[in-house]
Length: 392
Image (cartoon, rainbow, N blue to C red; front, side, top):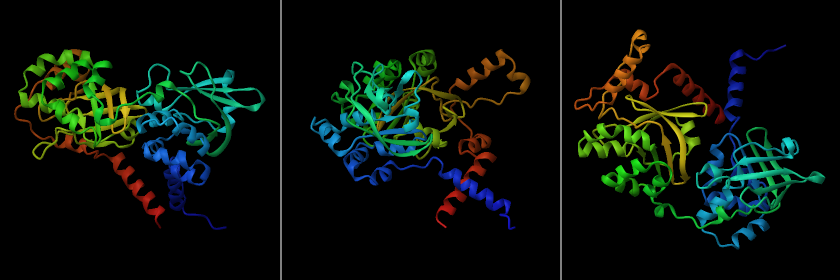
């Protein structure tokens, strides 16, 4: 009996693991012409790309007749995106799971909720197991009405993606409300309403706001420190020059759209609005499970929430101010004995926050910024093998 070499088996397993989470909603729906309109508008609103980036998702598809009813409302493409986002559940529901819901009813968050545009529970869908084997769907902000019922399963990859047909569009007054175009979105107004007033005030008082606004249409990701964090940093901020203040604020913006799923999958160095030919002004994105952190060589900040996610603009709230190495001293490496001392830790933190006029490069920090460690090198090699095998 002939046996496969261990290496060959390992490669086969690796190839299978590489394809585990790969799905393409456009290709799935292309197999079903009666959903061509729904498929078309997933592409027009850029929802298709977001669906493909997520590892666990359920799409509630509506046929062409159902989409005709929605299009008759003549919603803007941005309001239309909100409505379709309500039909994308950020959880897995196969046909079998629909009939095994505890207490016969459940609430599921949707991509409309994930964008931060939905208030309260407006972005949640009520799923109810009804009599006679039917399952109903309705928006939580629609007075308990179940507008649609489950028709059939189109495609399921357990715990990865499920595409289900429902009978009608799910109604939601909030999702259908007029929505500003990206160029009309007022970044500072969004911040003022959601706990980032102090950072918004700094932007408006400097020349940084203009740079942020100019980048919205082309794609912009903003990391906004909460008000209490900014207020605690006020004294140090005043000690910076006008140019330093602007650079610090621009350091909190990235000139590309980065959804949460993209942040979780794109670990590594990231340029900012402050990056220029002479200075890097970059930071490193890292994640551990659901936690996303930003490492600047001086401080590590954690993403704590989303103010708005409306491609091409996304604004996240973070728990610390991002301090660039170009303006502040790098945090010194502490010995085990020193690290155990609360006083020493406080001293280190104070030193890390102090402005630096003549920064020096540190090789170890540079290696960490570009992700140079054993695990990531191995990961890169494995990914290359996956790609190579796919095209053999």
